[in-house]
Length: 229
Ligand SMILES: Cc1cc2nc3c(=O)[nH]c(=O)nc-3n(C[C@H](O)[C@H](O)[C@H](O)COP(=O)(O)OP(=O)(O)OC[C@H]3O[C@@H](n4cnc5c(N)ncnc54)[C@H](O)[C@@H]3O)c2cc1C
Image 1 (cartoon, rainbow, N blue to C red):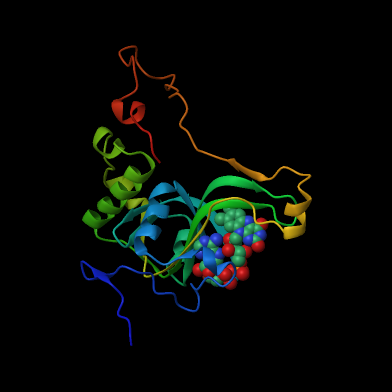
Image 2: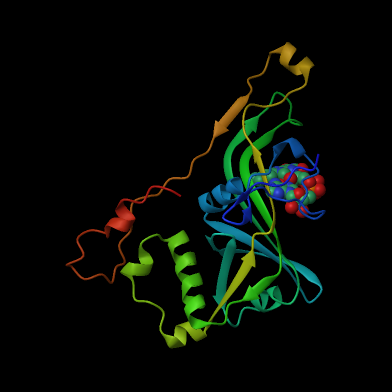
């Protein structure tokens, strides 16, 4: 019996691993639902973009945003990493660290996490309307509410910005949760504590710009009400 992948709005709802995106190590931690990919990407604030520049690997932290099955990246038109990103396949990784797993042995120490890796070709977005859409998606991912609150990019700023679109067709998700997995002898020995130290990200108190006028008595609601991510 050939199982057909489930479809939602014409899109396959499961990730279809390619040789490159198949999780081999710790494959019980691999997730196959596309929704889980979206959840990880939407929960994480920054990504790492890997390119090959002048024959050498280069990994750079950078912002991103997701709209459906498109991941948007942006930066200066002068950025060599973004120029090279459209010439050859790229890889984008995101990680949210949820806790440190303290095992009874050093060997079995681990981390609880949600991570995703996206492989593919990044395409430059050249149409101004689509570029603005990509920038809105990116802005709203990092700073929800800012697109409508702030002055939009002008022509010069738009021309100085490269926007790349990466399809989420080839991606993997790996998630670890739960307690340590120790050797039976160490568990039976029971002389050492073991467990998880959870880690959670929280926002601090907004720090007003020193150049703000006196009428700015409080930050706007899109900052004060921000909870997640
Ligand atoms: C915060 C954090 C810390 C980690 N620390 C360690 C560590 O110290 N040592 C260690 O060995 N491993 C660690 N891992 C797991 C690590 O990311 C790899 O999954 C693991 O090293 C397997 O590597 P591999 O070369 O065998 O990958 P393979 O399983 O062969 O990778 C094949 C494909 O699987 C996918 N894939 C692999 N790993 C991930 C992932 N984490 N998320 C999404 N897709 C993935 C990619 O598409 C990749 O191309 C950590 C993960 C996270 C998120």
